[in-house]
Figure 1 (cartoon, one colour):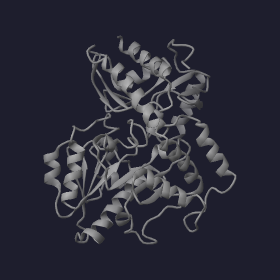
Figure 2 (cartoon, rainbow, N blue to C red):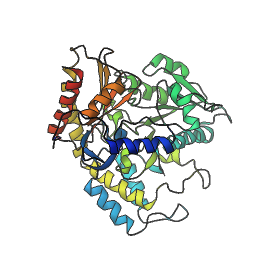
Figure 3 (spheres, helix red, strand yellow):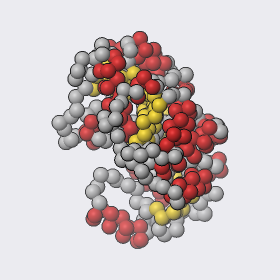
Figure 4 (cartoon, rainbow, N blue to C red):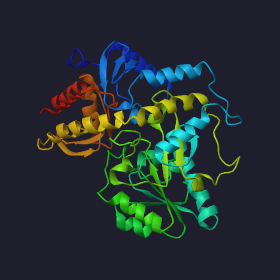
Length: 412
């Protein structure tokens, strides 16, 4: 259902007062758009003044199945009445099914659950290093992990150690050693970076924070071939790109690639709570022994109940198909902007797009703010780019309405 009004509005007094309170009492590690959300349903959010907004961000893919998805909420409510947390000191009756079904969805054997995406990436780093020492035979303290420039894997101290984003990295040193950064999409650099001490290549199949950058055709399959040849783990960070976002369960599938390790998060928690996981073979995850890694909340009963419902929804293929079909429509419509001089590039797959705004139009932030006035929520990144990633449940009519607002802002 499209919004009732398309007229621009300024930030209301209630919105403004709440934003002022946030700025007075919250660390300013984010720069939110001037909207204070009170309720949400499907692909729509409503602010404290009752104004509705079409959500074209979906919590950076955490809300792939929409706000207030009834199946997910019902699963969470049912589990809330039973047991929510045991810690891993005890077994609980949802854990085995969660591990088994997530492993099956990934075509893998074992699952190591955590909470946030950054925790899952940290877990993957520890996994790769321990595998390198125990299985590959890399000398102690010599393990190297190859990553790509412009990556975004989180903001912990170890992860920012291999970031090339000054905002994420500056003033947080000293940095964790053991990483080599090569340009994304550069196979020559990748080939040269792999040595006998390399234990893993960690890549996003599509770089989200960098602006929804899709690698050149053949890049991922060749990286997969190189890692097999050199006895190196291929670790795919599918936290944003996975679980239906690109029109497949995993973005790697577009290139026919199966990594050694999947890193999952965001949509796995159904937009209800943080759920993440590292999924791999028994050979890889079997390197852990009790006490070597863990999480009090990782794999808790509530998280497992929610994730099991997410897995069940993905098993039908319905959401992957919706993303593929609506994504094709999205990219056709965005493609019509390419010759207008108002955008300079469009990238993406499925219901995921990065749109580079021409300098004459404004920055990505300025365009995002103008879209707020028209009842549409997107988010900028790296200056000129806006990201479009609606919940997979969005209707075509609503998507078209949102695109019409974008055209209005661009003046085309």
